[in-house]
Length: 296
Image 1 (cartoon, rainbow, N blue to C red):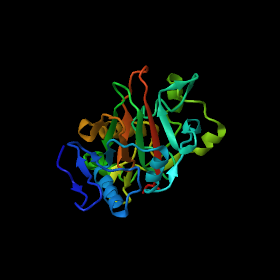
Image 2: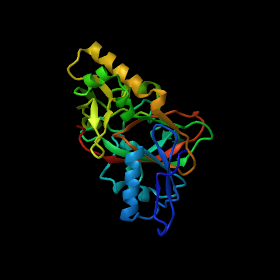
Image 3: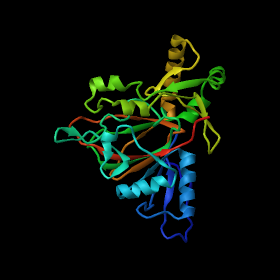
Image 4: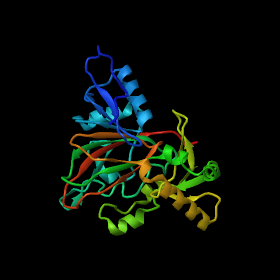
């Protein structure tokens, strides 16, 4: 790891620090107690670190679901997932991500993150960010990969960068849904009401981060169905090229989970992918999702 970006003033009640990873993105936050509300100055520093590093890993975070929800709400309104079956009982703001089956029924979404994606890119106001808090981790596997979509845009060949900068793409929650259902026990059939909640949306292929002004690619293999205005074959070829470029090794960082980690990523800046773990090993995490702005 590189040296800390900053630490809190020495007269602060508790010392904490942000340590960037030696990677294309990401930093760990140590020594910060999220079980209590952060004062405004500390919150501003956390917010600044999140914008700078795109993914923050809060180590040894021992908080309740209610405390996770409260911290998440400091960044904006929360979004609930269309798969209401997997909401945490008593806390609909939390999606349970888990491969555990109890009484013959899955308690959470066990195949979440099977494809590269940005959370909720298929709604009119895609997610600002997501927080995933480890509850139970497998002895092996279960890593999460993140791709820096600012770097992905910056490193496109100049002609391709100019070509995609003005294009728009359609995003749909249903893009891979039936494919996942065919091989996964975790995907229930969607009701007509649920399908109505996830009507396809059109967003820019290249979005501008509303807080930093940086451009990023905003397409993913999980949710992006087509480039608007292009013939089907040309659209598919261009998307395949963008998908492959986005996840080149030099754009990607792998998070190996530790007990009580809480990971907070910026969906406007990164995509992520769940690497998976052996089926017989239990994995459970709680996810909150913060509403963002309409991409531009």
